Image 1 (cartoon, rainbow, N blue to C red):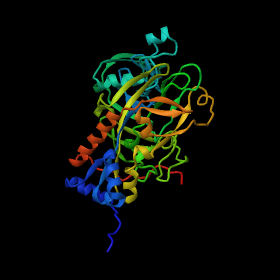
Image 2 (image 1 turned 180 degrees about the vertical axis):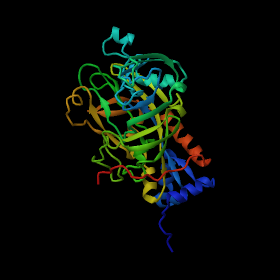
Image 3 (image 1 turned 90 degrees about the vertical axis):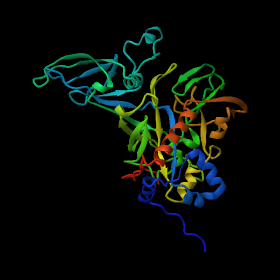
Image 4 (image 1 turned 90 degrees about the horizontal axis):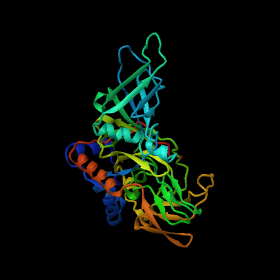
Length: 390
């Protein structure tokens, strides 16, 4: 008699987590389990697969409240360490974007367009406990009479600080090359002329959304690892685009889904939230993100068992095509090829380099694995899953 197909619920998996009986493995470990035992048996044996990524996340920022003064103020312009924040929310509520540069960056005075300090560095400095200069200006009203404020603040001084990433965890991304005859400086790093290097930005088989390619378990309310603390998926992110070519296993062959995420900045760590300056491009923030994937059935086991050899992306020219909106590629490469250190483009061997940190991604997946195994992290059933394009 054949065994019935595996069907698990969130409640069953969480009960096993609470009892200390859940079997939790990382996405890298799941590759071998599925290969050796098949998806159905893997689904019987494994309850949760953990994922991770640590990479620049330009669409990130901080909602914060800096507290009232006497007389009260309704800020119309706000700066933290000379980095402008958006003050068009409420009296002392603001949003600081990580790509916003400091207005007095000394490097920009020497090299126009070049910045070494911005919103991402402000957020890291807050997490490091540093004192930052807060400045605010206002036009004054009867109920908010003050017209300016200047004081030093730490993260502890802010009544409220929320890391909010409108677009995070990109499900796949381009492999960037430069086919022009001059170097170009992009968010994918410096690309040498005549296709002398190739940069990519994904953890491959560890990447969260590549382990749930059709978003069966990820959506509003999914509990995640974010910046060293607990965060949540709050909806699909900007540029979410599930309508892309996919492998027979469902994995996208080009950039696809994204997620909007948020979490309490005051509980996060500078180990997992780092300000970044990219030469010739500007500022951003590197963010640690991890999502646990419940193994509800054999299909989820198969999705999480996908290997770098089975995940592909497109080689795109950033020297001319990308900036001019030309949609063409110069080959398809697997993440196994990218991680090997070189790929072939137009018959030429080209060295590869990642913008994402594979060691950090592994560390995040293992942190989640330990937390779940110890009963410290339960899974949330999403209130609504992400749009899957079907």
